[in-house]
Image (cartoon, rainbow, N blue to C red; front, side, top):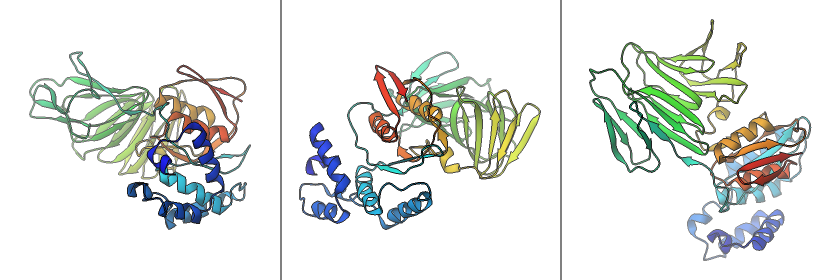
Length: 376
């Protein structure tokens, strides 16, 4: 356990440790931690789940026991000890065709690293700035607008009084990248992997318009005199001051706008609908638009909060999320299993830990270079 805490387990020792964790009771686990003077206190702080965490897991088991229950609660708690210990969690189960509940403790490994804060900024004159490699401070100016990289890595536009026409900039994240930016009007935007946002160096006229490809979360600065509009491939989202998420990847069959606070008006062609908090507008590619009255807002912004959350989605969509974050090309061999997943796992874990969770549930993989092949 001391070697585990220090990250020095060999492959064989890790296998034995995992096997032992399948059988150990919470009391034994607690006693060993108490008796180990060389385990850091900061590590011990995560050694066992809190009562509220245990209660939550009990509720999950109760809800899912109608389908199937593989682990007893005592083993769930023992597994949870490792989950909290590593400060990462993954609980996956299949609905419909293969319902089951499988808790999984995952350990960080040196390969298959997750994504991070990476992005490029393309200025109006064509200059490209690698945001993850430049130091903090003022990067450049466009007219009276200062472009600043803050100490927390965020990009900020400090707009002054302008006379000249605004210049249009584009911030883009690669596969395996994410980034946060504060726009010239004070609006905050978070970009998920493989996304881009085009915006002016300052907002002139009587509206604020940005263009999004991919996925972004916005906290819009209120300004009733200047509506804020997000253009996506399928339509336009119009707001005054609110928090919402837009998923508009070109490889998805729909574009989804999920409202958390305030109000937005979503336009698609001649259709329009006003959303209330907790609702979602679903724009079908080359189709119409529908409203979900009770959208899963936690699911919509899980990426922004540092998690994958796979609730009610199939394997192809799940693998598209994984491919963007770990910068992989995913291919399928044979028939794609018709299953829906549910669960949550940190985006900080390495790729092999995510794949372990899926392999336990019958999904197999072959990896060749940067290509991940999913097999039945």
